[in-house]
Image 1 (cartoon, rainbow, N blue to C red):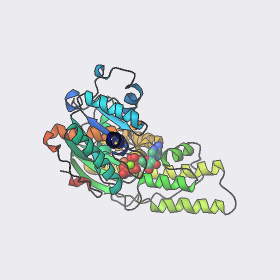
Image 2: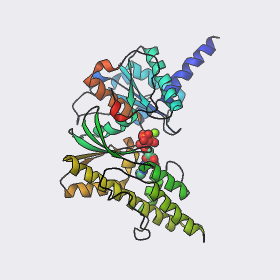
Image 3: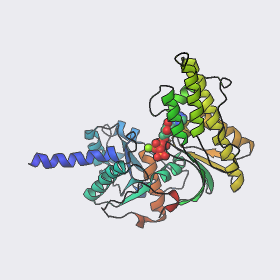
Image 4: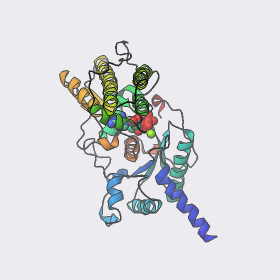
Length: 364
Ligand code: ATP
Ligand code: MG
Ligand code: FE
């Protein structure tokens, strides 16, 4: 009987490290913060000890001798390692637990919420639900020596979203434009599938495109001249599909044909993203662009934005590469920024309030 009870506790803690903000069954992470230990330092001075660092080191060092500002854990940790890490984190005097509270699939959000609230209850800590996209949006501020001043234009290009936003401060987000159909990351993933690559397709398509020839295919640049800041990528996907089918009607795609298609696709999507970002900067009169979300890891996008911004004397910022896609640190950091503004936001309320649908402009 004793053993059974103990197992339940272990399972619930282990899930914490595995369920904080799972979406689509891929990356599953959690983070929590200690706002007293330095994270609240001015932007540009944020020290971040990554979950990799902690995972690699926690059992080789004296945890008491190490000062962590942000600690996140991911599913690279085994349940036993997670438990040890959780204990060490608790010993560090962690004050708050933050968790991705939406938007996303209700089932995945509930797993994260149950674990976060369960952990908070067990440790008697206040908990704060964070908007997943706010996590992405503020992640560039985590870059070492980032010196990003509000206001700025944010290009959020993730697996489920493509949005341009005017960001005036923490929690002050105005939507300027967004995709009418597929998200940029989704377009990468669907193109990858057509080329026989596995999910998530962004990195694979990007790597393939480097070897491709830009002259081989001229895919459409949807809505490039629409005059607004909205996007549409469904037509681009169809154009890629048509081309793939055309080749496949005579033979299987060769590696170089795949690379050419990948290159044509990346050229098209990058051109539209750059052009709309420049239009957003012009329209708002702002001079700073911040890129967030998984597609922000794309090197061609970074190089093209860099070049376009340099021409206009704009500056562009990105998150560190490993923080572009979903991660625990961004949820911890967004929580830290919010708690800095208002520590009352976190509460010892153990009821679930996940929000599968949650527009970013409806933050409280
Ligand atoms: P959302 O945040 O909108 O709910 P998500 O969490 O699935 O969606 P992210 O984790 O920000 O999205 O990013 C994942 C997406 O980024 C995937 O679609 C993936 O293909 C894409 N991606 C990752 N690396 C690259 C890259 N180097 N180039 C292009 N796309 C990339
Ligand atoms: Mg995700
Ligand atoms: Fe995401």
